Amino acid sequence: MSESPQGDVSVALYESFTQSVRDLADTALRTNAGADELARAQAEIEAITARLAADQIPGTHGEHCSTPTGVSGWGNTVVGIRNAAAMPLRFSVAGDGMRLWADFTPGALYEGPPGHMHGGVIAMLLDQALGELSMRSGHPGLTANLSIDYKAPTKLNTPLRIEAWYDRTEGVKTWTRGHITTADGTVCAEATGLFILPRWVRDLPPEEVAKAHQHD
Ligand SMILES: CCCCCCCC/C=C\CCCCCCCC(=O)SCCNC(=O)CCNC(=O)[C@H](O)C(C)(C)COP(=O)(O)OP(=O)(O)OC[C@H]1O[C@@H](n2cnc3c(N)ncnc32)[C@H](O)[C@@H]1OP(=O)(O)O
Image (cartoon, rainbow, N blue to C red):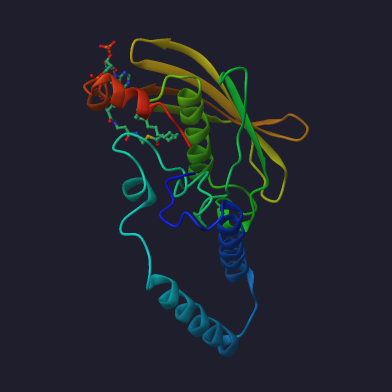
């Protein structure tokens, strides 16, 4: 986590702050407050935004806080601890990076069909899980192909588990697999992914590639 430009601010503080912003987004989505209260709240939110905007990084965390090939996870839209749009997922990794998983309970912010997770959000989570597994297994790459079978509706406000496994590597191509299940083991969606170490990384000097394999 050393890429923070604000090194004196702790990870715990960022996590706590970002969770409050997430809670605001969820509450804003579901509040029954009337026009007057909404107008007051909007003015206060805009004032806070202006205050925080007075000192911020340009662009994105990945661009601003990483080496050319290394990765800042803080802004990631699935796992980023500073990203209020991220759930965020917290992956546990086992088997020398051959398997990972995370438990999560998606709420109203992730709705597609009434009461159920949006299929695009499911794809996004699987992309991250399979891509991160590719990297953790020592074979990082960009998603070249992601194939998903949606097997059962994925209910919101229900505990879910996302899991990914290493399959195989052939040269610059690595295949991983994964799924999302309910607590009773029902498979809601399963995926296979192909991750390719891009040409621009293959063409880097070896010491830069070694750096690119590191993950915060
Ligand atoms: C060590 C550093 C690694 C850096 C990268 C890792 C960073 C990881 C960071 C953080 C991890 C956190 C987790 C993230 C999770 C989320 C992941 C995403 O959302 S990624 C965003 C969405 N994906 C894209 O934007 C890709 C866009 N596409 C491309 O950039 C290129 O098309 C790419 C890299 C996929 C391939 O291009 P080429 O120029 O590098 O590769 P060519 O030389 O053409 O092909 C190499 C081999 O791959 C095959 N190939 C290429 N594309 C294929 C495809 N779509 N399907 C099947 N085979 C394909 C070719 O036939 C060739 O195979 P033959 O060696 O001859 O056997």
